[in-house]
Image (cartoon, rainbow, N blue to C red; front, side):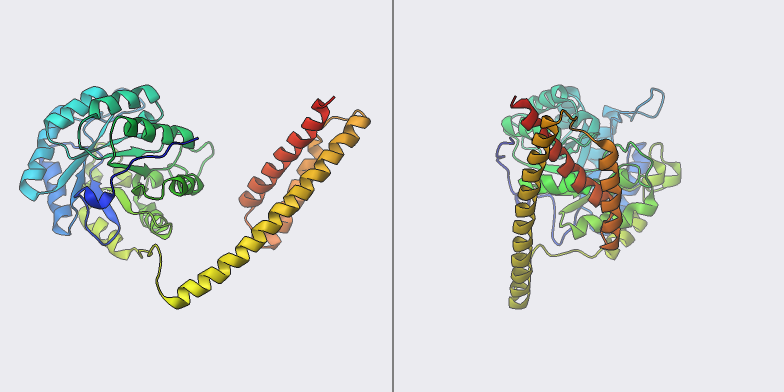
Length: 363
């Protein structure tokens, strides 16, 4: 069970200006002082106030470009001095935190690999204790909501209240168009639990290719997320890491101007009356679904008793496969996706098997 978090409203961070989206932009990696300053200049021209750059880059294989290290923090200091921008970078250890504090970094974030390691998160949380630095937490590599929440809880327990999250997608077991699977339902679940939490999407790491950045960014706005963290490089073709997913500052400006930002709510009488009527209808349908599910589970228990009397195993996979295929076919006819039907009916089947198993265990 997740605990309540004590959070400082993002409006009090002094980082972002309205209207949405709040934007954090800059290169995947700080590669040289010239590259950092040229990119910052381009972003500053159209009002980006928070500049990001990777200083330490956790890579899968040794020998890849793993960042310039602490010397690159001086370039971020120069960005602050010259352009008045806030600067942010990723930290993955206690040492990184101390270097960032020493160089006046304004905000840090935890990457997906770090979030997945409670030991590292705890070390970082303790290093950040008694600081006033905002901390953003990317989702872990795998779709584990509790692990994501646990990282937030560890930081909050050490007194860090300027907390936000970054949804960058999850490792995909199957080949998909994007670099990482968005699995928006997990982001929605986290948003439901912590509606006051500043929520950013990272279309760069989610898409892995600049061709997908606009559609992912628009989806984030459609879901009501507050911000975007997007990688921008003055010359992406020469980038030392993740070249294919970075935009020039000019291209990023065009992308942001193309977005339709959705309001979180509307005060008009027409909207309120219409939405209330539709929600009332959904509530009635949901209550009906619950009643039908309860009835189905009752029948499942009776089937369990019948199987027990005749010494028949619970699982009948050939029948279930046939049912699922039939339901997917009917679902398509109703305009429902196969993935949705599969998810719903697999959950129902799992609960039915559990109900039948309970019958067998009674004696």
